[in-house]
Image 1 (cartoon, rainbow, N blue to C red):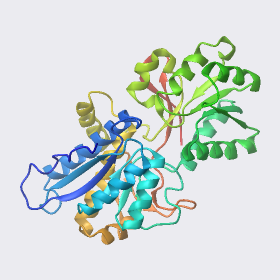
Image 2: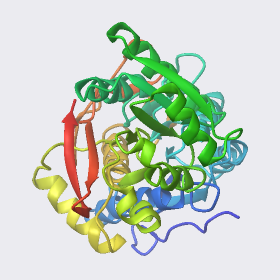
Image 3: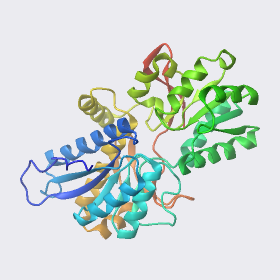
Image 4: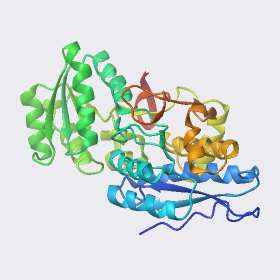
Length: 370
């Protein structure tokens, strides 16, 4: 079911609206909590643009479509939004979904600014139509591998599911750890029960288990099983994809969900803009905003500046990516061509390895920065 268009901008006079499409996972099996945070950031920024005069006096309007983590649904949404005359499409959290959306946007000649997906190969071939704010997986996950090496963990097991995203992440980890004597063994969560997975961890002598699998299933039962197995008391559980960032994780696992390092894309300290936006996002969400909410706000900030400077013509928007210079909530945003990346890339947003403090699970600790 499509989500109704946001009223953002429609409440204010000023001529025909400038429309942006927004792709967001808002229903299962999508990661609904991530989608809620992403949409909060997008919508807040749209309201702020309209409160300050819109786009040359025209209101900015957000047309939201729920992808539900379905690549085909996302591609169809891009078709629909293109037909509705959007100047650009924004958003998406899931990498395999963003990849489908990017391919369709490229084929149709619609600018797509990807907010959150990290898969390196967002498009098969280099494209001028797509830009991305989130760091590429190869960059962020190598920083996570450096963290593992720094803690002395070299015998790594990954609990994984079939997916190009998880496969890509496993390859990044293996390639980065191998020169340092690290090994990576893959454990198929579709073939192993959580208890059998624990036995495999013992058999392999693993010093770390990384959850390269969906949340809440099968990640939550795996964490519970490992935490409850005395043989694995010293093993590090990690989640580079960021599952512990969200309150839903803490609600499901309580103390068992703490002390599990994950990647998030925030600076050690937010500047004045980030602090102000963070406060507004907290009020909207009723909880601390995740990095995904900041990604949403930054996405609209970039597109609003492009629209003011270069107009609403789609080709002009795509041509403007290399000239973007916008102050985002997490630092100055510029796009460049990065080796191995097929889209215009912000290189790089600040990256942290963080976890929930076992002594206070609602508080985050920064363990490593890159």
